[in-house]
Length: 309
Image: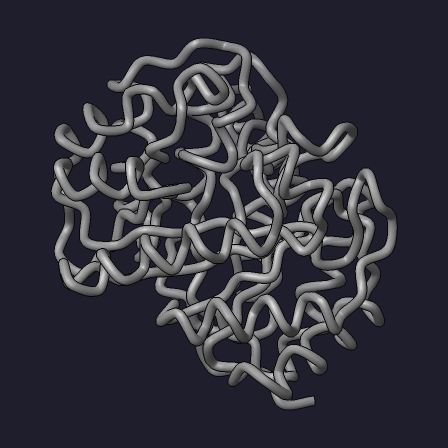
């Protein structure tokens, strides 16, 4: 097995991780989280989304968040945009990178962005054309690549065609998302192999949810195919309002712990990452879903208590 020497982790917690949270969060909290993640060494941090506040109220203050971030050199803070209106808002906020979001399932596309796959590609063609003129980098997500909550199994051929069309629109990277977390290592590997016949592996990323506990195994199964970009969310935050039953993303702490054990470079400080996870879970009043974070923090707590005895 030939593993990559270095992996870039794309932190999606501040957007994908928080978008479905019912606890209202202030812009200050989001800014603090983003700055802690950047301080830990993450170089790509999804900072928010310019979407309808009616449907995703947690993202309504994205412009305010972006204005308040103390941006670090070398760190990218992309935002999700679904259409030209979202792009215009992003441009007004001074962004340098955006993401677009397509689905490999017709039903999910209708539920998520209220249009067919074909219609979504027409929208994205307009968005990408204008973004390129404004010298904005564009990343693409494809959801439901290994299964749809409404249609069941999804054909790798459909995913490959969609990924190819997004790459042809000028998206520098296409992230393959197992939105409902049904994938297993063999299925994940076969999908990446299939898509990789049309889109260069170095332009692909993987994005696994951990609904069935397979996220880390799926990531590991794709590393030796050349995958070197992994999406994850601090503390395993996440879930999708249009994917009933889907749990959170692969936890960034777990991904980092595994990569460190494999001797793969990331440039991320695990201790600082643990602090960021502890911060946001305390605010949300919920348990950290990262097994590595839970174990490491418990061990630290036990050591501290032993030292006071």
